[in-house]
Length: 419
Image (cartoon, rainbow, N blue to C red):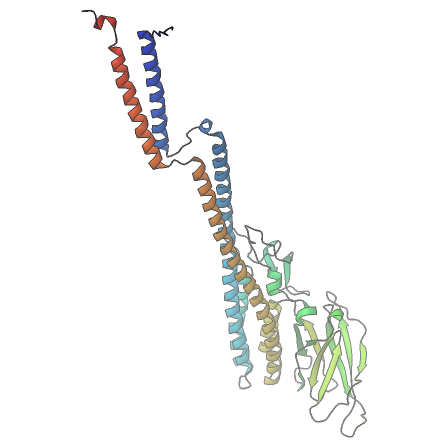
């Protein structure tokens, strides 16, 4: 039976103790660095996989923060536009109220002109609000793109007001809403949809009345202006009534030369002597004329290109009305078209409110996503402080033990036993 004898030299024991101290010291230093930084990954080499995960999470968090800053700017712009539309609505309601008051039959021409002064101020305010800009100097109602001043007018040639831009509404994305609203939809009119026409009597002293214009066939609408003249009551087939005839003259949009007049004879009922209503139809439109026409009576029917056109026409017709009858006719035409304009403004204002709500939802969703990514980043690189302190204390205890062990090894010498 053989015995295995191992001999360990003192120098080897010294080296082993020093290596142990060095290892303990390095681990203690690493634990201290982790505690100081609050991270379990101080260098990428500590954990390459989790380092990549943490960096990916930080990149996405930064991207969300940038999207939220842009969304804040977009929301503020739309909120400002919505507020401007609210001011426009209030101004239009006040304008409408003044128009009704101006049409009161007890008002004289001078008194109606007093109303006109305030109406002009409201018109100017509405026009200014339509050209409102955001804090960056960009128009809030620029649609898909426009000049810095989207609405231009009044102009000498038709149309009197124009929108200098591309109509339409920019689409929202998952993280953004438009910076601007469709001003063309809010303030400009389409004659084939809105039928916002103004009827004026050529003979200001006539006692004829005209209804507002209604749309009968949108496919025939082309933006032309019309003149109704030569209204004659012919021989009827029923006692006390007669056939009515008139002539329609069309002036195409953008032209100053009218087309050839077209005579029209009513094919419907005879002209009744009781209500004296003459139905007039032309170019996909219709209206009713009430009263007994004379040879000098003419009516001009002009499409209103915009809300501003309606306001200008109301101011002009009411201010220049020679009598209460013409003022009343101007008021009835203005109220119809103002109501159309209010409908446009309210529709776009509702769209603005929906965009603001959508922006709020987007912001909240992005905040939740950012919190999730922050949790992912924290799991990848942040240190559990309780565990970190426990590990540090354990390493510190091990380091102290290694130092004490080395102190004991230093006493191991043959000379300590030869005496």
